Length: 438
Image (cartoon, rainbow, N blue to C red; front, side):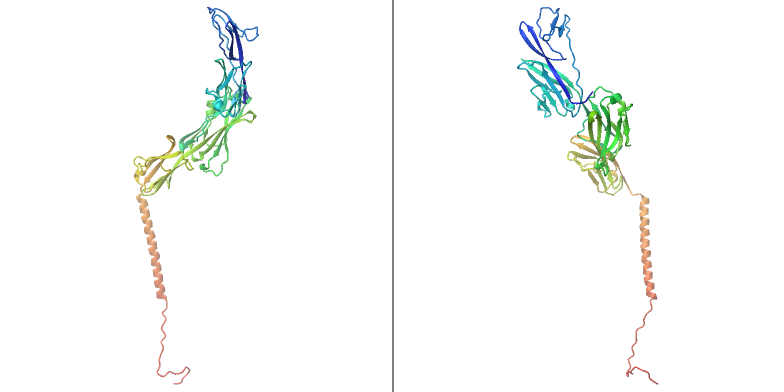
């Protein structure tokens, strides 16, 4: 079974009935069913034979019990998403005035789809098929007011589900992160013999977000698919991943992780490899909501407390935060949402303690929520006693130092010798300097 672009030729057979009323042109799909007009012979207990062209063997027979032959159409080989689909509505002998048009699986005219090209010869090409192209395609042939439908079923294999929006979860040991990935519209093949088919392997990779606290965005391979037998995941990263979904159900490549941290923020990619280097990928971005208090989850009465609800990066314009404070909190009336992501309690009081919940909303849809328990405590007596003792000790030491300084200064003054003043004698009859005899 090859998963390549498909080309289906839908042959429309031409039946001409020779009756008294003239020839009647009827279109029908080869391998399908067709309603042929017939006259009433006055009795149903007759054998009616229909011949195609100059064939001597009847193509359709109707016996007295009203039984007719019907032939089923063989299914078309599946297509991988991203490949091109080619269909052709071919008529052996087209008669002037015959018109052809196509209907998509949604029973709509696909000509308005920019991916679709329709030619005059009845061929249709769909570029880069997706899951919406899976289903019954119909070629409608119209002639003289009569219609004939030629149907074919197209299987498009893709990884589901698609996640255009991130998966939002919250930091908690109880949070469950589910990463879905499975083959949609799978072909009838078993994983046990997948090596003989076109599926060659698979893997999950993880690219951390800068908000996860990682300095580098190195792609990490979480698990690899071992085709076995038996089929099993080979775990490369010990991140608490649950890979049991694969054993419970074939073609289910989903992963589960219990206990979410901010380190789980990032992009997860599920990939399935096929022959000819064809690979299907589906990426999922995971955003983790967390709430923390500053300076700590335990605060004292009168202390300023800051609560922050964050995804690790600024919120986009379509995301809003809503705080749910404890019932007895003085901040119960926060006003209508949206609330600020950063909430400040200027002076914490006993009534501010309890469970605070931060909810993340997009329009009217709650995406996730996270809780934190804030404890407001009074300063215990032994702490005040310790503070008093320490303060008294500091004051005593300062007084002691001051006393020592004063004593030293006093001693220095006492020990310092006094210098006498010079006395100058003034004589009435001063004598010149020198030696004299009495």
